[in-house]
Image 1 (cartoon, rainbow, N blue to C red):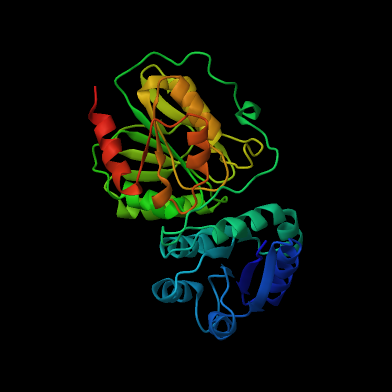
Image 2: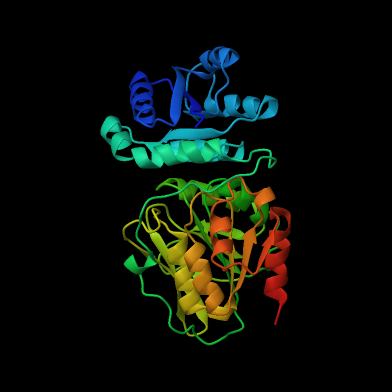
Length: 356
């Protein structure tokens, strides 16, 4: 098996040392260099081009955003952002994701070594997913096999019968690797009048707020990080908080969300499976479920539960996915009514909301 060539770019010697040691534990990964800033990186890349770059965003001489934009313009290469868990860091990281980074790996200000060692599985998974990323949508992607994991049973029981049909419609979206760019593409295309939307985007704690704020500044609809009890209403999209599960609830004819603590489900918190199961239970045929680009299979079983309860379901097609993992697994389960390219999903959401 060909090893994944990784270049680490971070101004902290400690971070470079810990990342190198952690990644080198995997026989499928070869750390070809660890440098202090993008200028050193450009020199190193002339000798050997990496398959994946693990990049800090706040560095002297040249910041990570400038480097990332230059990289994507000249020779697109999968980039995993390694960013500090701070509000300021979250805002900068959102700029990096918008510029073409594939995903985020978090690092705290203290306890770095222990944190990265404890979180090594997620770090390795992020690098492997990035190596399979279809940046130009020309190379076919494949899902990464994941280990045994908790199901949505850990948070809520499966639906036996969905609630009765109402005139209110709900759109539930689940996505992971490549999803930040895909969601921006969809949500910015939506008019003010569209169904209420609930979203799980795999993203660490403290980053979802900055992500929602950025989208809200770009979209006609309201986009916010979900808070407990928030109404799901037309013209509003609620994004699940990083580190907490989001469930759809219903009171009379009104939908709202509940934010709960709980273990990772399908290896993620928030989990798409948890959201989709709650939508199956509370909305049934009143819902449209959409599973999009991402590694692994989170959301596949939940979408099947929505399908079985009469919901309409869509999967993003392989050609437009950065990583065709989650939609592929949902399709294999028979959970997807139709697959659509990213360019058609916003239109489908609007069309769904207008149906009676």
